[in-house]
Length: 299
Ligand SMILES: O=C(O)CCC(=O)C(=O)O
Ligand SMILES: [Fe+2]
Image 1 (cartoon, protein in one colour):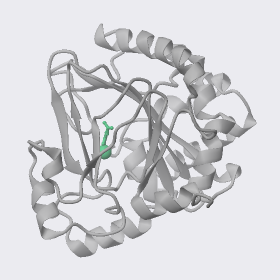
Image 2 (tube, protein in one colour; image 1 turned 135 degrees about the vertical axis):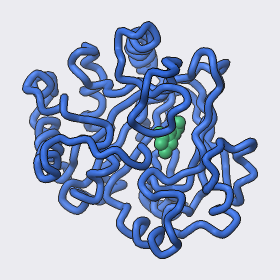
Image 3 (cartoon, helix red, strand yellow; image 1 turned 180 degrees about the vertical axis):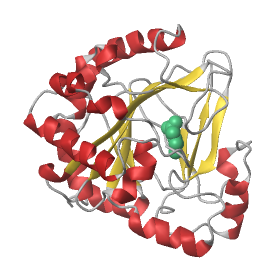
Image 4 (tube, helix red, strand yellow; image 1 turned 120 degrees about the vertical axis):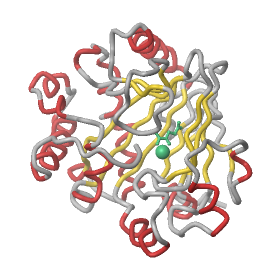
């Protein structure tokens, strides 16, 4: 019996895992080392303070601050100042784009470049993200939730683990339905969960090195970060500029992507396809009144 298309699982469950050792793998086992090496270099720059665009412990969403510089993420892997060409090459590669197109059901010429960050383990504090949807407030009424979820199908987000990663928890199917009263209660607190599996319907997403989980970022999800478990997980998203556009602007532009307008960045991109995706992001930035930062919600 043939397996269902990738997009069926993704549309139904709100996420789909692509294992490392399968034909669609985003990072096959033989390619792990160059990714790990490049990540090690940017992690060192972040932990020593040389790279200040980072997600700091104690803050779930932007703007991140430096009250506690212990970091759980490195922002903007494609930034030319980091000097790691591998990241933009991969983000714009046929390997990545073909899966993104299949999940979005769009053409290459519709794709919009968005975020590409790295999630890492903090060194001296354990940390957790509370239950959330990236672009729907925890206080949203049921009606607002239904409305927001109904519009959120024009982008995909993914985590590609370079080491075993068991940080993420999701509630399968919750990307299309409002929370039950119990789920609402457990996701309305600003505290991190004591046990994520207390959330009705929750499962833990376990990734082996090289595995990728694609997920709808409005699926109900949370994450726990142990300072003892090494994490280097590529964390990216891409949108369909034609259908998505303004719907995605708040979520994407809150991360301050002004640097992407520099010609120096454009020159690092590997081909016309990549430059086309950047042009569509820049169009979104100008439509939204320049590359202004709209701080809100998650990312
Ligand atoms: O750490 C993760 O895998 C999830 C991160 C996340 O949910 C977020 O940044 O909004
Ligand atoms: Fe999130």
